[in-house]
Amino acid sequence: MKLMVIGLGQCGGRLADEFVRLHERARSFRKVDILTGAFAVDTDASSLRGLASIKAKHRLVIGENKTKGRGVGKQAALAAQIAREEGFKVIDAIRQSKQFAESDAFLLLGGTAGGTAAGCMPVIAEILKERYRDQAVFGICVLPFEHEEALEKINVENTTHCLRSAKVNMDAVFLIENQRYVKKGMSWSANIAEINKAIAGPFYSLLCAGEEKKRSHIGVGMLAASDILQMLSGWTAIGYGKTLIPLITMPWDKEGDENMSGRKAMDEAISELSIQCDTKTATKALYLVSAPEKEIGTDLIKFLGEYLKSIAPEASIRYGDYPIEKGLIDVTVVLSGFPVIERIKPYLEAQGKEPQASAPPAPAE
Ligand SMILES: Nc1nc2c(ncn2[C@@H]2O[C@H](COP(=O)(O)OP(=O)(O)OP(=O)(O)O)[C@@H](O)[C@H]2O)c(=O)[nH]1
Image (cartoon, rainbow, N blue to C red; front, side, top):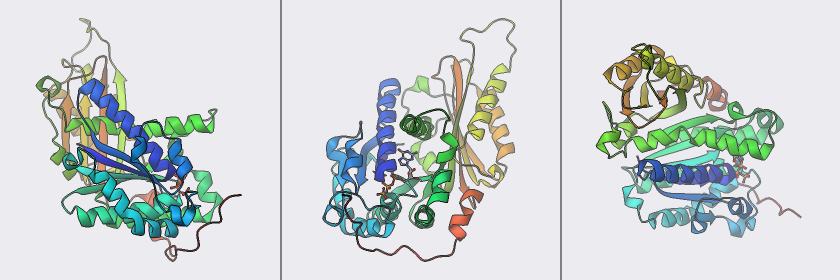
């Protein structure tokens, strides 16, 4: 599946940067393109300067006349107003990407507590939906860290606004629990870099899946981009797991061991899901397995399919398998179409008025 990626705000921009690195990896190792373009859009020019992989001309500052390029200071309503006035700049820029027409979907990314992301994501999603009716719009919504929820009411208000509007304007929203990736004993910047890798990583197999062209890289079943698009709707979680296996098979290795290795990898993918959720309520699921050719067969695929069915009994399930790995079995699981996810219920049910646009924040001294 080929995505047009648009990161909004600091978190969104950094994640979009990470997706560019996934794209480079896909080109080097699997000889496929998974992005048709990657853009970072921010009201704060300084955040864009910190990016490493997104091309300079794909870094867009919006709202400069209102904020002098210093950001909206958490004001989602102001960011939304800017996005309504200047969203056309984003659309013009992405349309100029050479591969724009090959995009299967748009992917908007951002941290829900931020003013820029919470304000711009819903507006940009709405504009994209209006302009490109046949194209899916997906979101990656990164929830605030625990301490942020407690520190400032505005983090909660922005998240509330962002999630409610995301549900209306996006076809599927990948929910990401920032807190679950935090590692103790690591500097904040190292933590953020690791967290971003951990958030983006599981998307690698998913995006490569529909693009694999080499017959020898495709096993029992291949998922086309259209299959993946159909399996994504509403609240969605993604997870990845892997199990190392011996490079050489010994005579005493038992037949069926690959099933247990596959199951271990799937267990890890489920326990590492991007958000805690009741898997039994997912209505759609897909799993992707990569393993050495000799390990992948109908047995393993059937075994994992049945196992996933026991975890997500209400879901219709699709799969793809790829005999491309050496020394490991890896499994990516996507669970989608959740009617509710407990973690975000308080946001969706919270009473309160929508954020109103107010004066831009005073520039920092
Ligand atoms: N995972 C991850 N989270 C981040 C990153 N940067 C910020 N965040 C989180 O994302 C949320 C929004 O923060 P920002 O991205 O800085 O906010 P913004 O959208 O730029 O909005 P303003 O700063 O108000 O203009 C907060 O919960 C941050 O802790 C990042 O690189 N990775």
